[in-house]
Length: 354
Image 1 (cartoon, rainbow, N blue to C red):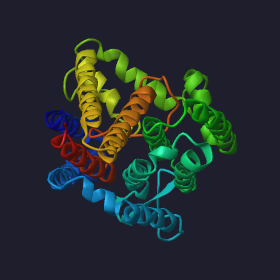
Image 2: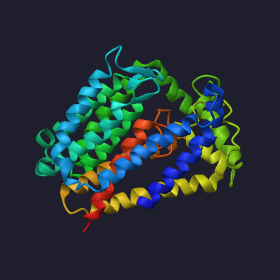
Image 3: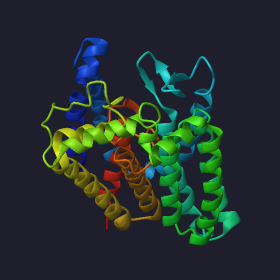
């Protein structure tokens, strides 16, 4: 697991530089502008990984409630004009200048920690709809509602997806989840219809060439990057789409640059590393010594898996654009540091495996 994390992180640093060098030089006069910041957050994240890897995961069971409350408070604070920083059309940042944190990113881990504690203590009630299923789902929906007020559909979707995987693993009944899934689908349709830009993303997903210079632009440029990559790619650093054709190539669409420069073989190798990481996470969950450790391993693995699935699905045109980054690879401070911290907890659980 540690080897796969290290390899993915190394690939991410190389690709962040390759994807962002042109943009960084044009905007800041420094080709290393983005990768230097990524190195800083990677260093902090690796330090956090080794810290959490060497602390018993049972400690987080005690502090999970406090961590969740703090994250809820931060989600409320970030909505206050003048305090929350608007980037990319969403008021989802707290910080100064180019440095900041996204409370929604920390909520992913906080929710997984608390649900693992809650469900491990009340697992006998999980098959009951009102006493077992509604309380944790209500908490998830409350956090999702606050995140959507920013709005940040991507982070909210990952949190809900990982939470549902965790709740299902704890023993929730399929028919209960299916019934709520239908209500959730109706609510999602309402959210899409309430915001015109979300509806445009759906129509662009179905037919991006209907608006090639508008809502379909990102998907088309992403496919223009992936297609020419062929089997072995154009070569590291040889991407054409990063020359201001593909918007923000170092974040949401970095997998497009990976495919363009390293080809099908390089992109497949990266996917294989993610599959190994997810497989080891599942093995850790199965072999964990107690229910809390097992559910926590499922939740952390779920965060990684859901995020990878959605990001790559968007990049190859299988899903609408949601603004979700590729874990450990895309440029981003809060996401990178948090994921490495969470993976340190996962590594610690694996130490106690039966």
